[in-house]
Image (cartoon, rainbow, N blue to C red; front, side, top):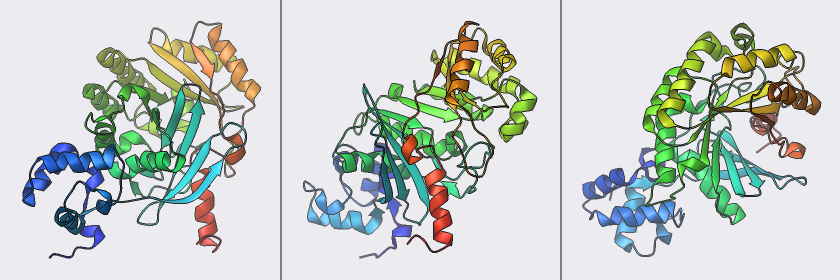
Length: 356
């Protein structure tokens, strides 16, 4: 028998069904075994080979020999007393942390997942960028945020938002693999029409995503309709200009037939004037889109803030000019449910010896 360290074993949850079939053939097993294992992982959501009871003890032993199932550990779990939002801080096998937020709506439960440990994008109002970028998440690490939350809460999640820590399109290959696994008809079988992916505007990847024809909702973090001003708060705009971004968005709409959501975090004194609203209307004129207005989250290290009234007033500016806009409902305000804050606070405590 070969004894491999877990770091040398294959991350089985990141394999799609054809890849798993190939691996079964490599260890001398029949093709149908792959589907059995795939369904244990993605339908029954069993994360121990010993619990796969319709598989022989011998095969279970071989699976443990060559493969691993990378579980996450719940480091913290915060529940809102206001709206039943639940925020998880998950510890990864290598000791890093990511955040996941479970949200309750009238139509069901939606989950916001992270795609990276930290973020490279450096948006000045975002807590995720402050602690820096560490690494990309694997497909299994993104999936496990969903599967483990479902198990912990005893629920089935009906919608997924890729809007947690990290820039999804900066981890393109792993995110695409995750989406294929999430929607596989032999597995979890979630329609990608119930998935929203948020990007700060990595233009080449928007074109690439359009060609995938996933049918998901693309959300673009816009936050400013003036290119010079946007560059001040979003460094990505210095690489991919607003004009380039709008061209890519129009291509996405034409290619997929899907409406784009533009996220606009209102920041008092920065982007909330009636003039700002006029520029936004001009920028988006003629596009099949919706504007989601968000009161900016307070971050300790940043001097940005906004009142709820600022968001509502800005929405009125847009509406009277004929642009479809709504103010996003704030969830989990009593548990700091905005992404990046819990991870950052935990890392600070670890440095001072306050967390094990």
